[in-house]
Image (tube, rainbow over all chains, first blue to last red; front, side):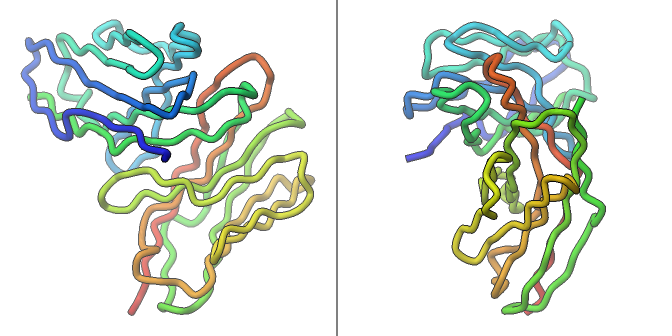
Length: 115
Length: 117
């Protein structure tokens, strides 16, 4: 089973709202990722958590705040977003028994619209 | 920094025919991994095939196979007996195996594959 789940599927929020995206996997994977994908573009890496610790932050604005409560869960907290933050947000996970060598499996994404 | 280039924004093929999608990459590393992902209109990113750079043998997965040319830094995907369900955006992706820990994927811009019935 290589399932990564993401909720919600769609989210519409105003620029003053606070919302959270949730990602979950039960494959025992030890690395989890957030990617942002604008329309007709490839995904771009935002954050990497490895063994529940933030290991990579690709200079993402502070209005995006990741959180890894445990090895199965990854959240992305959103606050004071801008309309240009509207995108598909993809979560992925990988086993990382051999760091850097394992395949990343993606969730279905959350389509975010900021008004 | 690594870069991945997909020079074909769009490809079209007749159902049951064979099509090849191109991908080149630039890296100074010797150990890395290459992937082809498929993203249909549903937007779910699905792994198609993976290749370890240290393996000379080209990876195959049913109707999907790759032509990996390490010296030329080329990694093309061949789809045989194309089916309507193969219609999607195909992304070539690179992952470093630096041994320093988990790292993200570097994606090409994608090739939109159209299957003509």
